[in-house]
Image 1 (tube, protein in one colour):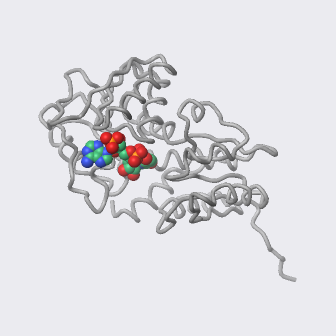
Image 2 (cartoon, rainbow, N blue to C red):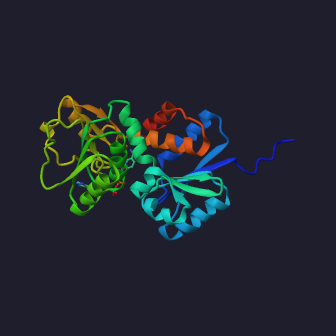
Image 3 (cartoon, helix red, strand yellow):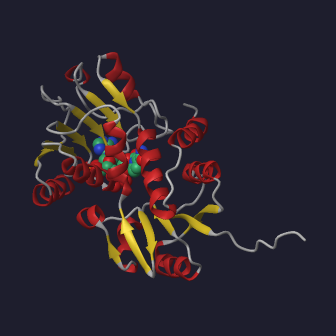
Length: 285
Ligand code: NDP
C-alpha cells in the first residue's frame, strides 16, 4: 500500500509582499533536496495588516521557521516571543526560528554578509565606507563592527537615517562610527580597506546605475562589495575591478544568510555551492 503522506515534516517559508518571483524559494528548496530533507519552503504574500495572523498561522501549523522580507522585518518583532543576539541590537528580524514553544527572531543578513566577506578579507582592524543607512546597512554595520571592523563611515543622503545608524554602532559595538551626508560626488578616503554599497542603486532593471562616488578614489588594496544580487556583476563592481580593487558580489551574502537560516531551522549544514548555482542560473551570472 502506498504511504499516506498528508504532511511534510519541516515547513518553512518567507512572509513577503509582493510574493512574486522569490529566488530564495528555489535556492532553499535546492538545498533541502541536496540534504535529502523532507522539507518545503513556501513563499507567502502577507499584507502588513495580516502579519499577526500569518505568524499565528505558522505557529499553529508547526512551521520550524520563516524569513521576513520588507516591509515585515521590524513589524514582526511584536509577534515573537523574543529576539536573539544581533537581532535585538539591530531591531529587525529577517529570520524566525521555532525553539520549543517559542518563536525567536534572528537577523542573518549581517551575519551572512560577514561570512561572505571573510571569504576574501579579514575584517579585524579594517576601516569601512558604507553607502546607505537602510535596513541592510544597519545589519551589516553592526555585524561588521562585532567582527572587528574598527571604523565605519556611513555615507547616506538622509541625515536622520545616517545619524541613527552611527548612534547605533557607537552605542552597541566597540567600533568608531561617523556620518557623511551624501551631497555630491563622494571620494573614498585613502586607507579605506572595505567599501560597501548597501543602497538599492544598481538593482535590476536599473543595472547600469551607479552610486555617486569618485571612481578614481577606488583602487588596489580595497575590497568593494555590492549587496545588489541582481545583476550579480553591477557596474560598481566592474568599475572597481577595472581600477584594481578586489570585488565581492551580493550573491555571496544571499547564499550565506539563507544557509544560516537553514542551519537554524534544520540543524543541517547546506551545500553553499548548490545554493549559489541556483541563483546564478536565475540571475544569469
Ligand atoms: P532600504 O529601503 O531600507 O534602504 C535603502 C537605502 O538606499 C537607503 O539608505 C537610501 O538612502 C539608499 N538609496 C536609495 N536610492 C538611492 C540613491 N539614488 N542614491 C543614494 N542612496 C540611495 O533597503 P535595504 O537596506 O533593505 O536594501 C538595500 C539593498 O540591499 C537592496 O538593493 C537590496 O536588494 C539589497 N539587499 C541584498 C541582500 C543580499 O543578501 N544580497 C540582503 C538585503 C538587502 P536614504 O536613506 O537617503 O533614502
